[in-house]
Image: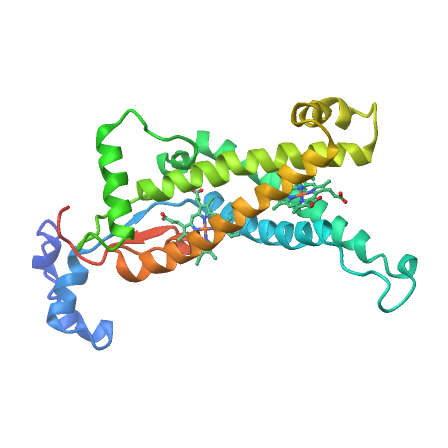
Length: 261
Ligand code: HEM
Ligand code: HEM
């Protein structure tokens, strides 16, 4: 039963008897109610950021699987004549389609860094001149190495995650887009607009073989990022003082305790 006081100017906790309200919250005890009364959530990742995250993750998985197969083609004449199966054609088609989706998404994400909230900008810049930020980087290294007992609270990304996202995603995806389109331009043909725009990337790295190799190397860097990233997201969901995975689903960061720092 919810007991409310008529005076609407009185503070919320004076107006509502939270212990009586426990019936509304299942098996909550008086202690639980006291806790939920003080804990609040912060809206951190807006819809476009979350949407981009999951579309980008799916596109990258497709790119890694199909890219790997492009580098190490499967035998295409297992079942029937190669021309009747178009196996490699489908693999390359999936790669290019996912590549285009990832590129458009990335530009959309850059746009959102300008118009979104300040957390949307975190992935694109590192506050390298800020001493406090470096101290937190060091702290996070110690925390991930199990050398700190108590983690810090963060509303956006922690500084170590921010560094990883900046190098592997902001720089990494730009690199994959540039080299990917330079490879694509070879297929479109010499003298095409695509070749005029991206051809210089191939000339810069030397030749087509070198371009293939660095594009493939980029994939392995991204695979390493994905493994560390998923480990860290789940580990921090369990061990940190705030929500993680659900934050990338709902956008809200919730805190597990109400200690001030
Ligand atoms: C996360 C992003 C990406 C990953 C992980 C990735 C991965 C790969 C890998 C591993 C290869 C094989 C390289 C080799 O051994 O020769 C490849 C080839 C290729 N990729 Fe990507 N790629 C990505 C993004 C892109 C993008 C954005 C495009 C642009 C459309 C693109 C276009 C190509 C092309 C044209 C080839 C050569 C296909 C061929 O030679 O048949 N890639 N990619
Ligand atoms: C290919 C796979 C993935 C890639 C490339 C990827 C990439 C990213 C990037 C770039 C961000 C920063 C978002 C931004 O600031 O805009 C991020 C954040 C995040 N990702 Fe992923 N992600 C992947 C898979 C996953 C999976 C499977 C999970 C869940 C288990 C996950 C959970 C998270 C969480 C919780 C955050 C926010 C971390 C924080 O608040 O500090 N990601 N991811």
